[in-house]
Amino acid sequence: MQSNPFFPPASSSPSDPVPSRRSLLRHGGGLALAAAMASLGLPAHAQSRYPTRPLRMVIAFPPAGATDILARIIAQGMTSQLGQSVVVENKPGAGGMIGLDAGAKAPADGYNLFLCALTNQAIAGHLYPKATSDITRDFEPIALLANGAHILNVHPSVPAKTLPEFITWLKANDGKINYASQGNGTLSHLEAELLQQRAGVTAVHVPYRGSSQALPDLISGKVSFMFDSVAASQPFVKTGQLRQLAVATSKRVPIYPDLPTVAEAGLPGYDADNWFGLYAPKGTPADIRARLGEVLEKVLADAAVIDSLQQKGYVVTYGDARRLATVTASDRAKWGTVIKTANVSL
Image (cartoon, rainbow, N blue to C red; front, side, top):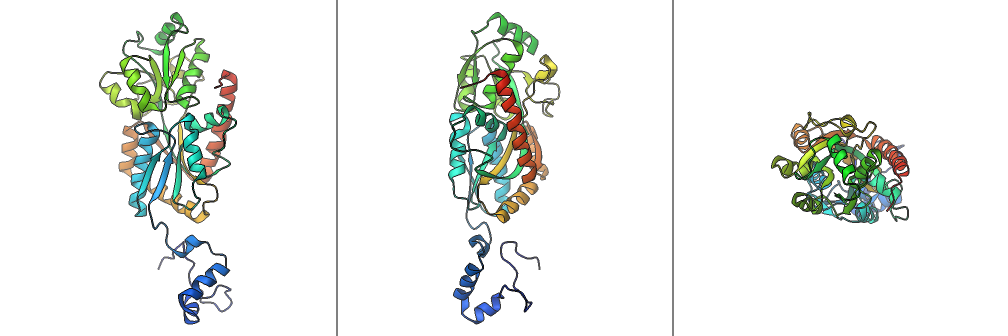
């Protein structure tokens, strides 16, 4: 019979310092068992199979954006695997810092998780130096999940069908064109700042609290362009309400194989890969984190999940906790350099 990883097997060896459950019950019943486990320093969660109640997954952006769409697909898969509901809770604002704070301050009991738009957080970490929470210091990595491409979308009134034409138009209207972002210090914001810096143009930043708040103004023409996720903007591209010019990532995305990257379209060296990872508050027990990592590996190996994510512009990139920690450190260093070079500040 397979052993339960959250409850140590009974000892059958006289030399084993851990008393068997049978002997404990014989010499005092269930209370003796509980007392002995406590005296041995075994964690409380080892006394019952995890999970025994619903889990909460905090994200730092509002509904209908890329982080929210990914979170709900992942939460549904985890619910099926764990036998308990995984509830997504939106905590938007301040470039993702409000959600980060909420995730960091949650109990480290295995029932609180933080699905992080990692690249966005790597950027915000540099732009909010006085932040009270930090993705590296205050969280435990669980697993790398996916890469979600951002695309340069423009309103149909913009007289440009290619990136070079778009840059020419921006130069002819230098400082007069409004653009939207998902908020100050977000990846969406920095992608546009980086494009301006590389192209030698300026535009007027109009920050929103997330993609779902910005898209109505982009669709109506109140702002002219925005870097946004495939997942959020795809429905409006299909209806002709938005036009795509280029993808911000280092490689083309499978769902739009003919859409060039920004680098291919005229700005060599430009790339903005958008990573997502799942974390738990610092101090979450290691065996629970390992269990969650195993669950996520199964979820992201499911053909239906992979297809659903690809149709929404994500590329599944499962990696274990060590891999997520490596990508976290790498992304933070990369965007710190970009921010300094582009002289971006809030």
